[in-house]
Length: 319
Image 1 (tube, rainbow, N blue to C red):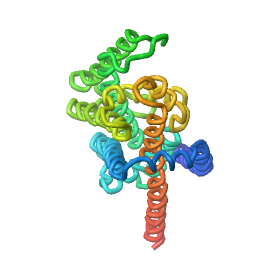
Image 2 (image 1 turned 30 degrees about the horizontal axis):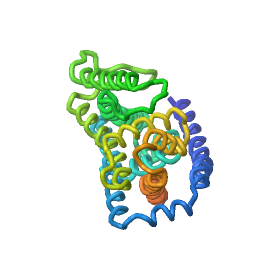
Image 3 (image 1 turned 45 degrees about the horizontal axis):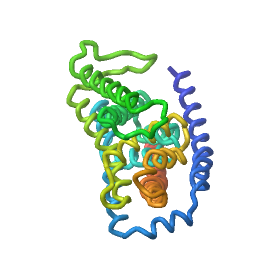
Image 4 (image 1 turned 60 degrees about the horizontal axis):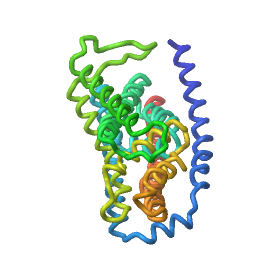
């Protein structure tokens, strides 16, 4: 047991060091690829009311995604209050979007939760449930849209519209199997190495599907608000589903270039290139960069509060 604790302590120290080295490097790689003059010009063309609406939708999206960790609290039974869980989850989501899941979704979440006193096994279960919520929601939304024939793929694409419908049916099947397993499986717990995996109840699984689906829908709604009136929201949402999975496959932080390429390739016949690029630049500024800035400041506050708690605990122990 002592050897295990020492190994974990060393691993945590190495992870912390790697985190403080990696974050500035990745942050620079994100920012240096943006043309700030182009961002300024694109956003200057929007009305303040439009930007405020997009920012409001973004706020709702981040609040909903951060609430995935509240589902994790219910699932694991840990007793950290929502006032600690929600800011932590917000920081992790913003860093996850911009700097990859390894930084935000995993490394940062383990660091912040351990500083609040959660066990590694509990953090793993919270993280796992959040990932399931996100991707089960993706299966519901993407599967439904693909089955309905959205988006219409340009001629010449290898997968074709029929192939896309089949993928949609498969995604919906995955979501239904998960939901049925949560409701009716007789065996509900497995052990994977030192971790215990338990299926949530059907009510929690239903809530996962609803929250995950709404989270993806709000992301597309930000782009929708930045496009001219008459934009086709279901098609935009379907294109976002494709660009998101393409970004995951390529492992490019923030999907830089991937999102733009997919949107321009699939929607070039529906919108002018300048109009679409302006919306995507606005989307990156409002949904990615602004939350990242706020999350960075929030992270510094969380680290300061954690340091104060550690100092207080040491003082009580020595006293």
